[in-house]
Length: 491
Image (tube, rainbow, N blue to C red; front, side):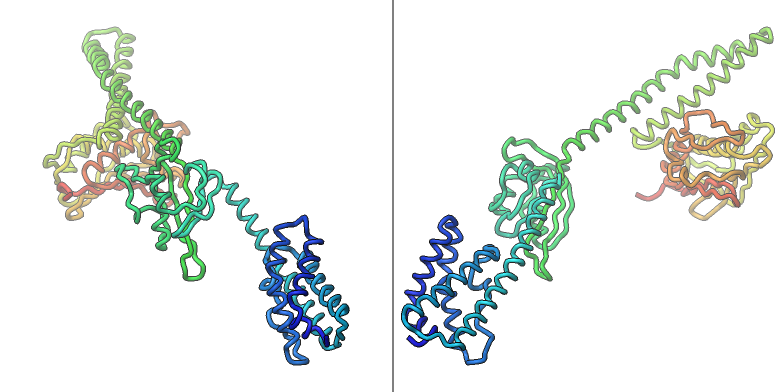
């Protein structure tokens, strides 16, 4: 026997048996590892034989990488022992057969072992890094409170604990088609079952990013659940390799929203009913106060009757506002009765009434052009009164309030302007919301009333197909601008 090359060529099976025996003695307690190494022995011997048959001086040995010779996941220690046992078996058999170990072959053997072990270390480090990242990703997915599952066109590959709970058990390995049959996805508005192609998972596999509300049927309990489903494709470069889906259980939230909606609707209906029923006794109070004021009364009694009359009228205005609020929120908007009217003729009596109530204030009316249109005169008078009273409430007593009317062709513009401190930028976005009384009078007090005047004014403008906006700055003051179409807007 001349050397290692001849030993592997003539006594390969003996070498394999010797190495396998040594492996079994060393790794008897690690059966899975032992089976993996035994199955890899032929590849190891082929690679070493190819290295010994290479040209002298060639140190680039074919196929030395442990990733191709040994299974991944063995770590670094096991392959090192396996290669060491291979070397001991070769040298032991060569010595027993009386063969001569050539220096060139020894150099090849050690060079090949060094490369193989180095490749083993790199492979082990790479495998450990991949395993670490996989474990970290697994931990992240399991910590997400929403139901997350990942899969491809063939099967679901991962589902976290909330997904297993929400979707009825372990999903791993089942096909998307079977998952769709389990969940019975349907549209929450129509209740109709989604087609296979319309399901979020299927759309994500086609490259779409989808977020929509879906009704699901719990596979175990049969309970219908409202969920918000977000699905997106998983890409590697330009290729779609799968899809990820996040399902958020919205059942409790939807129930709470429905309860809040019912509560708000009941409250607003209650306000409407109470406001309507209060009108009769309040009218009786107002009429009685009017009768007393027409009688010959002592000054003290007349003064008390006057206060009763004024308070009754103020309560009547509040009740009217509450009824308008209820119509605006629950009745599809404030109803109007259109007829040909002149906006100039609407504004004059409104401002005259305000001059009586505010004798020390200056109210100006500027009008130009044709100002006729098909409108509800009573409602527009209410709108102008609300805007003008609001301007009087929140402007200095020595400054005028100006109402300007302009002809703009198919539209008419009405502006109510006052000087004074501007409305705060924080309040502007909510200015037309109901029960909003965030501004203060010039003397620091808040206006009386329910805070419905601007809300009702806006609802009246909407009912006419118009717009109501506000602009407020320190330099220009505050201007409410109403734009009204002269005729009924086309639908």
